Image (cartoon, rainbow, N blue to C red; front, side):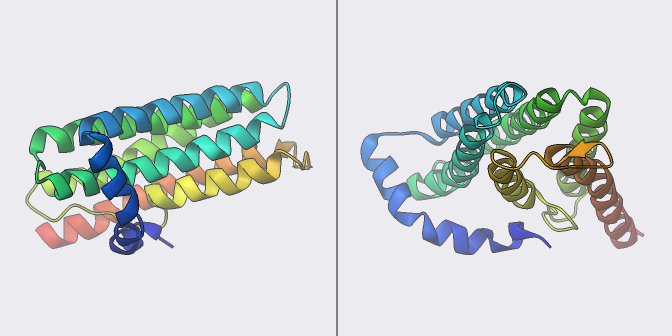
Length: 202
């Protein structure tokens, strides 16, 4: 799968948003912070979903906002010609905190913290291998079985469905199974990225 390969197309689609943000005087760093706040809001909503499933809807919307804002900060930096290593570092650090918040929020909502730990480590290792390849002289890797864009789309879709469907399978809800996917496929994606990077270096 990976939707990260569609980033150039997504950048073109948000061109009007970039223009509006420029006119509003937004900076790329501010957009990165807003993206993190959207993710934290989503995490809070997912936590509350343990009491009312409709909170998943708000969480899904906020995850969507996080995804759009994550595209916007880079596109805005290029438009303003303010791209920098400092901005790139800030963006990646805040993205990791956003990932942690969303996954742990999902785990809290279904009271599956051990599963949440497995999922968040899979997510973090995927992202780590994506940037570590660049640190050793290769191109940054966005591909693999499950990239960040894929995760955000899956969270949005599953959260929306979970707001109305309380079905369980083998004792796990839809969100519980989503955490299983993040745990298993996340680590597989990390290993996949490691394998290809290691071969390229060898």
